[in-house]
Amino acid sequence: MKVDLGIWSKLTRVVIVLLGLAGVLGVAVWYLPLIYQNENMRKEILRLDVQNQREMETNKVLKGQIDAVQHDPKTVERLARERLNYAKPGETIFHFEEPPATNKAGP
Picture 1 (cartoon, rainbow, N blue to C red):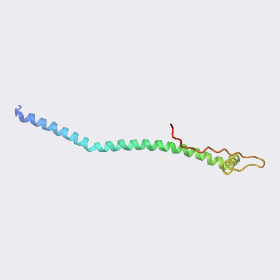
Picture 2 (picture 1 turned 60 degrees about the vertical axis):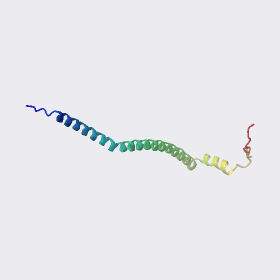
Picture 3 (picture 1 turned 120 degrees about the vertical axis):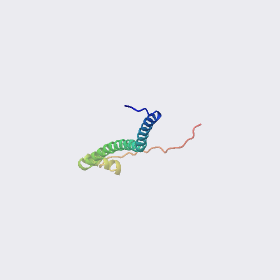
Picture 4 (picture 1 turned 180 degrees about the horizontal axis):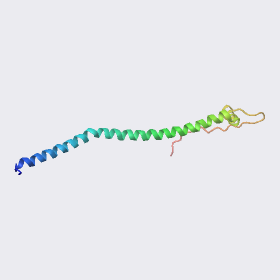
C-alpha cells in the first residue's frame, strides 16, 4: 500500500536530481582545466614533432656533407678552391663582386 506524501515525495525527487546534476557539474568543473592542459600539451607535442622532423632532415644533410668531406677528395678540393681561393698551377681566378646596395628613396 502506497502512502501519498504529497509535495514531499516530489521535492525529494527534485532534490536528488539537482544533487546529481550538481555532482556531474562539479566533476566537469574539476576536470575542465586538466582537459585544457591536455589539449595544450598535445599541441606542443605536435609542434615538437614537426621541429624534430626538420632537425632530422638538417642532420641528414649535414651528415652527408661530413661524409663527403671525409671520403671524397674532389669535395675537399672544391671547398679549398671556393673558401681559401686556392688554384692549380696555371689557373686564373676571377672574382665577381656584388655591387654595393644603395638606399634610394622612390619618387
